[in-house]
Image 1 (tube, rainbow, N blue to C red):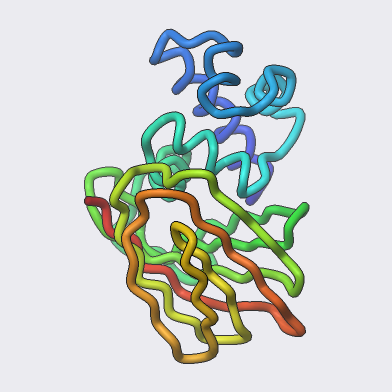
Image 2 (image 1 turned 90 degrees about the horizontal axis):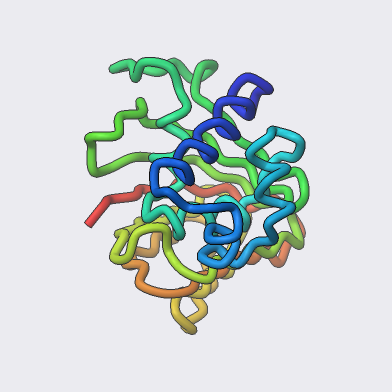
Length: 186
């Protein structure tokens, strides 16, 4: 994610909290994130990890893609490959490219993702209950646990699931997991 995008994201996260009338303490309680981390994040002093962004999206009841689309400039009809926003979680080696032209009013989107070998990302809850995912592995392998059931996926495999509870993405390696995720709002 570019520096401008990170600044806009920090600002949007602060706006969402303010719109709800929540204090940093209230958001910390709802997202199970320390108050100091939230404060530093909203001031743009730190970049969020995928897990942290997932917790915040769950607290705000919106998918990560919608949050990221909200910090983009005017949503275009066409986004060329070189202009698709890319967000990186440097801590876990997770890279997320928003392939679909962003639009907060649409229900579906396409995301391209890469997960470094050995990476392990767990989400306590979905950002929006009942999100429908279609995950298609196009390189490497992935162990995806959805609500306690683990699916071992290889190249070409596609898993469709709805998110109601916790999920976990693990790349057992030795190469990066490369996959496409189609997300449909309920």
